[in-house]
Image (cartoon, rainbow over all chains, first blue to last red; front, side):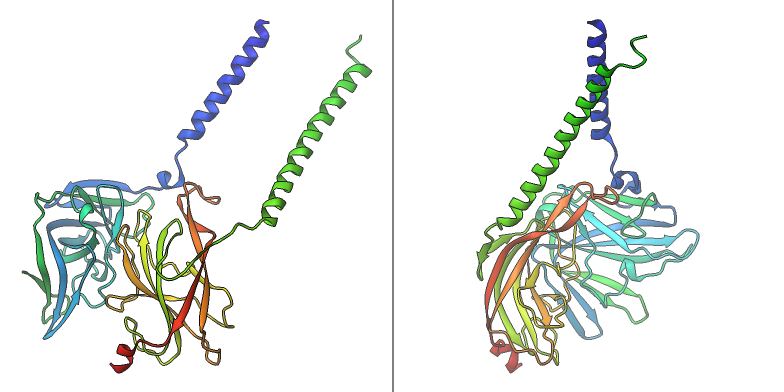
Amino acid sequence: MIRVLGSVAGLVAAIAILYALQRTMPGYADITKPVTVHGAIGDRLMARNFELTATKITLAQRIVLRAGTKEQVFETTGLWAVVEAQAAARHESVTITAASWRGPNGSRYAMSQRFSTMPGLLPSERLEPGLPRKVLMLFELPESQVKDATILVSRTPFTPIDNELHIKANLPTPLFVRNVARIIRGTTAGEWRIEIQ
Amino acid sequence: MSGRFSIGALRKQAVAFIIAGLGAALAVLLSLASALYEASQPKDLAQVAAGQAVDTGRWMVVAHRAEFGKYMKGTPASQQDRLAVELDLTNRSATTSAGPTRLLELVSPPAGLQRPIFYLARDSAIAFGLHPDMPERVIAVWTWPPGAPPPQKVRFKVASQVYKKRDNLYGAPGWFDGPTVATLDLTVGGPDPAAVAK
């Protein structure tokens, strides 16, 4: 009798252990997830092969790109977030191709790819060690995802066990949304400045 | 000496094997029969027309109109005839994604038809990134093979995309092509007069 009870108990225990193992097994995305570096706006954050300091976030209804006398207007159904940053490589030249805005509900808004001729965009600048550059990241967001967000920056969109910067984007309430963020191309390559209206 | 060889034990073992075998055979037959039955009873697909919303899993789709020609508002100029369908797309997943080229498939396509290109209706840019929860008016453009007769009415199969927490190869989460969820009927209008005049 005791023997039978013992084997039944053993079976139940085995099933429970296997179930627990199955439920808690990390998925592929967990095993290969990036190593995060946390910080806030204004912090100089170090990743394995680049460093970046996000300096300013501006919200705007539309973005205007001015090159010479020509103006191009970019509208959106939500808002634009213009993030300015200083970035440099650490050991060798590098290009940072992935940045996204993670909203409070976890949705990730990748950097907008609607600008083919915009100067200073983070993915189009090659960063060199010791030469910090002023770069731009432009995000298109619905209004509900602007508060309590995190800006994620990594070298490539899929960075298994490499660094990803998590920059807390704390914006003051109420949100201050500008009418136009005008990005003006300078006379030398890669030079630009922002005018806010 | 009774444990060394016994007809009774052998028979017991044989009976156990036969019962297990019958059980397995029954399970195989049942699953085969249910698969055959499901395949023989095609589900009635929803039939939608212009203006009706379809939930395809990853995308919420509303088709507005179809047009055929060389000049179209909202797309760059082209030398070739094209079929364009104006859509509202809403990305219901948690990440930005490019326009879904397998979303609409013509039921009887002309030979040599390629997959469509999606343009943003607002500024004719190629729709590289459609963001979560941001409805966007896009134009899907199929370049029509030269010589193929122009379409009057088109019927599309609307494909779904389904989320898997763990895929079969890596166990990674992702979106995968799912079954057809609806058919979409559109009447093809001529080119937009405003676009031709431009």
